Image (cartoon, rainbow, N blue to C red):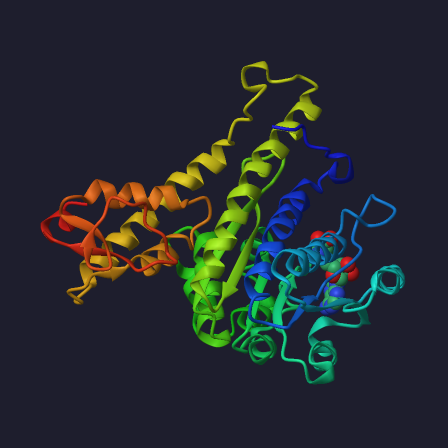
Length: 395
Ligand SMILES: C[S@@+](CC[C@H](N)C(=O)[O-])C[C@H]1O[C@@H](n2cnc3c(N)ncnc32)[C@H](O)[C@@H]1O
């Protein structure tokens, strides 16, 4: 595995590298996917920065990484598939100094059929301006929205919901779980929590839960994205502190199509590997001791391992429950099992296949009504059919 160049991300910014790697992997695949049918794509970064960038051209910012990835995908789509897609990037920033930089970047990067706009102001107040630019020239774009605020009060659900509710939109939100957890009991912040989740009773449930609060907050937020913004499927990535065994934030992703979950999961798995590398490098730099035992293969942190096995067990139980609740004799669509399980960070498609294999022969994988040994894919008509329900009771 190549050695990571952490130089732009040292000193506490390492988690941003994980987020940036996820964007860099996910966006081109998204453009290839939607570019076959859509003529126009809008990328919205509601909290663009630049924020603590080290590179003079801001190559270590979410907006520069996204613009670069989108431009390459636009060219690839043209060259490989003969498809032309118009790309509009809309970057919002509130801070005056950062905005001046952002504006310079936007004017440098705009070319024919690839527009980059910078908007100055509070994201939530600029939504009408964003929509106007995205839909300029009576375009009907597929919209991907990145919301990476420094806190949680800047993204009230009530104002987000009509912006994200459109048929063709996706979102990736940073959920600063460490801070959300820390101030949950403070009465003067209660209203900001209510606005973040946008549904009655969430704050009270989180305050009173006996379960892991961070996990419950992510589940509640995901439910808000589903119910209020009409995202059919939600998934999440977990980003850890570089030098501690704890979570820095979650990246919560919403999509209207199961294919989005497939593509996001692939990007999340790659970002999780980069996270292992990042933490390993940070450890070496802190201790100045190369970890000889793990020189070629960086170890997972204790926290990552614990989260992985916990999320896998919750996801496995959800899959079993879906199978048990099914009344359709044709079985449960594999894509439904896939989306249910792949909600959880660090859970992989191979985990799901393994759980289903462990249920054989009580549960059978079928393709077009016939038993198959082929590896199931969510994009084809694979189904899981319960032959012997007893196997589920014991699972
Ligand atoms: C976490 S940083 C963004 C980092 C960037 N996404 C990246 O990964 O390179 C958040 C940015 O949002 C800006 N900001 C804070 N509140 C804002 C608001 N209400 N509307 C727009 N921008 C805001 C901050 O000035 C800061 O530049």
